Amino acid sequence: MNIKTLKILIPPFLLAVMLGGIYLMPRKGEVQDSSISMNLPTGMSPDGWHGMRRQESEQERDILAPDTEFSKADYVQEIPISLDAPETAPVMCRVSIVKSGHDLNNSIHRPERCLPAQGHFNLTGTTVEVPVEGHGTIRMTKLKSQQNITPDEPQPVILDSMHYYVFIGHRHMTEDHLARTLMDMKDRVLYGEDQRWCYFQISTAYGDKIKVPEEEARKQTERLISQLLSQLVKWNELGM
Image (cartoon, rainbow, N blue to C red):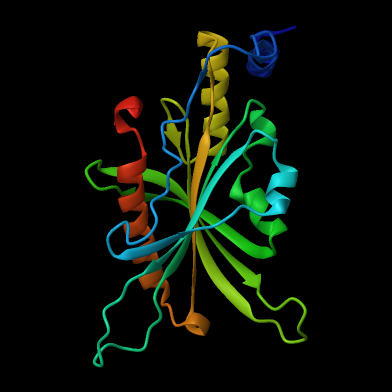
């Protein structure tokens, strides 16, 4: 076997060793909690919004592990009444925090997997920088999708939506699913540490059909992200 062949074989061999090492670590013991609170504010909070709790669906309960935790709320933008203002509707953002149980693989799924099951199609994604009050900017994955909201009608009504998400562990925050997996492997193999991960997701519909311009939806969604994460994330644990 020559050196060139060895160079090709060594990386997958090392990856296999790391993956196998996960199963040699104890599955129970002290579990570090995610560095984000599940307590989404409601009522007239945060400033400029009205929040109302929302229950997770039976479908979500059925497909995820029994010890998965959910926190969901809908936020409607408060807009001043003005006769001079153009005819626009308030922005509504749907927020979800999902916390993994002990079985991470069956507790957290990427929205890229979940959204198509909810009827979304034409998904496109990118990484964006979102400012957070008092904490600079964070990287999030932003998806765009379309959804037929009248599936039982002969004439489809297509709604456009944007979705932002980020994963938050005990000491880590990342917008990337693979990076989250590697961080979790590293903490288990090197430190013998289990942790519970959350994903924070916020979805907003926009377009002419609901009188919400895309740029206004983006602006208000990122404003709500900033307000919520500045309150909910335990920034000292993340070192940010």
